Length: 450
Ligand code: S3P
Image (cartoon, rainbow, N blue to C red):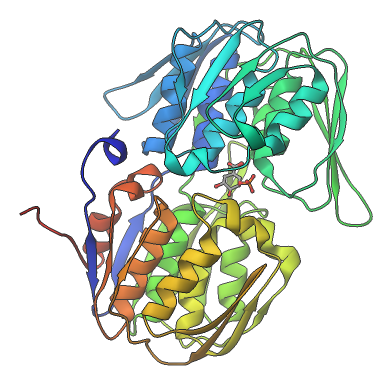
């Protein structure tokens, strides 16, 4: 895996002209992880088209092989996953290396919690800092044994047991924690119930249904949701077409909005209503985004986006919208830096425990690029003057793909080039980012080694 084993590769984005063209973005990361996991649990073969071949997802592919599934890539780029049924995983003979991926880490901790063996997990320096107790605690309540460093952090071991179902209210809005509990529930007799005060992405629930399992979801009056799963249902192999990742499309949507004269179409973008907050927000700021061709594909809403440049206004983003665009705030901060007036973004304490502390990393980098802002405990207030910020400066990415890509987008439209100290980590979620941006007319280049 490239981002771990080589020297840092700085990347510079130069001020560029309009972006134009029609492209598609790599497959959705959340759905790709789940396609490999659920394919590995169904008895028989599932074919997956459009899988994201980024490092994070390749970690899940490797882990599922270690756990006994067959996972192979066909010559045409599709993937085949063959499992032996729920409850049929085997003990891995080595540590599962989750690299930079919080999703792989947390989902697989849940998956192995009901397996009668111990699984050891490790990851990179970023993952070792991230909170895992949020997953460990409910799994321990179900009966699994977690042995970890203090604070429940990686590296850690999960010893699986015969679990008991729980009734659990999520203390943080996290699809990863919800999914970990549902994965632990798969081979647990009885009904496991998860309540989420604020709805989070529901790809796990959608995919369980796609594989033929019954999942009960009910809305609460206060806007929350209850998900109930009766354990020990069989899963039936079901082919999957992974839509383009809206989180990746967001970088291009912002770039096309802030670069005058741009006109870009992104085909086949996942538009699950629990993921589309960024497009709603950009439109509220005055972005010209047209959604075309809305359709349903393997239980997920998909469409094409046409984005034309426009002038943006500062707005107050409703904090309750945060879970539907949690990964898109770094690039929204960039959009807000070009808007006229204040953009207030709050309710974002979760951004402090992503691949990096995204509030701190973005605030430092944006200030270095001449953006006026106030950093709060739970968000940023960005005060734009409606024109391009100064840019310049070299930004530290802290092993965080979204920090790297956000600042490269800023560099395309600022008055001076922007350099990120290490672009390798972009491979985790968006392989080919620099070339794809180049095909639209962007100027981005890796620094040549001496
Ligand atoms: C994800 C859930 C979110 C998101 C992450 C992917 C998922 O994390 O930030 O990139 O696939 O379930 P949280 O559950 O920590 O909010």
